[in-house]
Image 1 (spheres, each protein chain N blue to C red):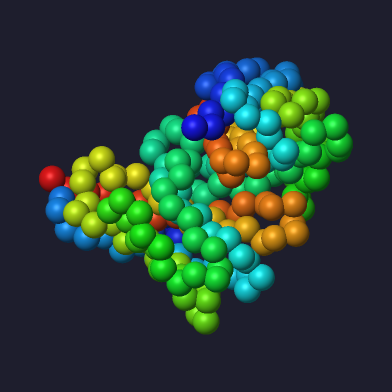
Image 2 (image 1 turned 135 degrees about the horizontal axis):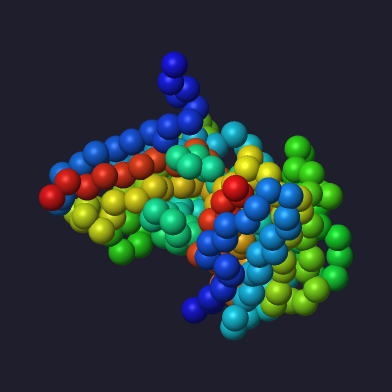
Length: 114
Length: 113
């Protein structure tokens, strides 16, 4: 079946620094990748949608300059949280959509900004 | 005071009982629905899906029912086991929207042995 690898699984960073999260589809090509954020005891909130080779489409209220998304290939998308602050601490999850397997989710990244 | 919006609805059942988890969706144009299970600290795991031209679909121990008239989905889990304890989300897709998958609020299922 389809596997999506997301790294790192957890990261602690200092306020003001940037953090990059990677999402890779290991055995399929992802036509579209999605990035979600999830706060404790809440649902997954879609942040942005990215297609390979084009700019990401951000949901309303999500700052595109703060959450930089790069989708350089059909198997890799990255989310960079720039100038992170404690309120950016959250669980970030990617999802890759392929032609055969539908939507496959990564295992998530727990970001803690101190 | 406590904010209701910050707490997931919960369902507590005894092992061996059947569980029914409900979900209301808002977009009448949604044409595909998926149920996911999420364990603590992990990504969502696919359970079962259903297209809008169906009203019922069965899997192994799970059944999804779709009522488009009232925009309601339910997930039925037969003979619930402790390993079924998790948060369950329904998600919907509107075709033509770049296939964005939008999640509902979620329900925390606790199975008591």
